[in-house]
Image (cartoon, rainbow, N blue to C red; front, side):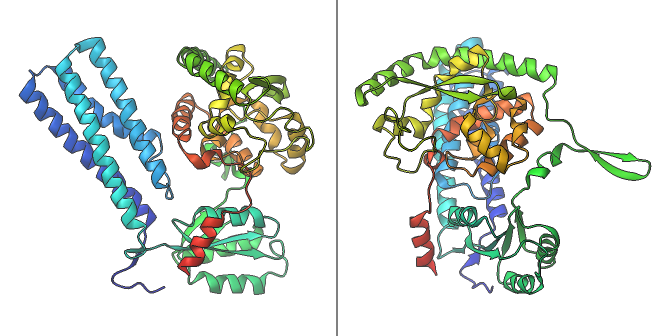
Length: 467
């Protein structure tokens, strides 16, 4: 596609790098201003210098931990939430150190002003950059061809309509499984691919078609994205070895070591006790609101599976009317589900309905981080659809999960399972800490709490308007 001199195609990787460098430039400016402020209003010591410079740098460390620069398609709301949370966390750490070691009111005032200024500057710069990059008068969205074999049409459309702000997305479906009389179909797709900037291939495209399309896209220097296959879940944890002169990849088993298990349980107890102390009052307020909003119990208990398919009774704040499944039987929540109460909708949006599970964690039924506990009724179905589904029971169920922070209530079960298995394969103590941080971000993202939906009508209309 030809580009005019006024409108250029967006480069998502470049935008991500620009945001990162811009935020570091703001950080450098804040460091200089705080040094100047301390020079004017206070005397220097080594510890004061360390504290003065720590906060702006901590903001960037938290921004990285919250994955503010990891994804190409972060919406503006997510970027803003990352900035505000990172600034808040950095401020709390530095204020605590100041109270603990320095007790300097002047320093507290300086770093309070610095934190506020850094947040304002980063919000302003990132918002301006985001709006400029999404302005059709300045930038054209890169076009993407999304391709899947027959059978995943709903999931295919969901991906398409989920990325319309960043990609001009189109999709095609292979009528036959890979390799079956596919020459003409492949030729048509290859011819179409020339007019797109990027290619996304689904995991159900197999064999020669998959390899040929990837190879051809590389020849055309297109951006390439692939939906991962379940069998590739541990690919990042493989280790190269060799049998005689033949290269062999060794994959670790899906189990935690005894040391990992000890660290994980220790983290569970420390954080759960601290969370219980902090959340006790909010939980009492939520209980009163539930009682006033609708008749029925405050706490909802339900049988779920945890490690080794052990059954336990999970505790949640009730978010639906009593006997919500009396007529329908077990079913997932839908978008705008009429069974959800007014208070329940707010609790689900902020994930606060999960708070009573702190008691499940203290009892040892659950962990802070792990695959979300599933009901036996659905496990039986999923095991028939996904051969690797059983592996997610190698660890305890979790209050939050990789699938919890990257997905939503309505995430496709194959994708949720991939996230869970990837978490187990990549497990580390620091991964748990990172997921806990990401969970705090997810609580403020509206789309993370969406139920099962058919289409994003507004996005479809928006795409039609740009044609």
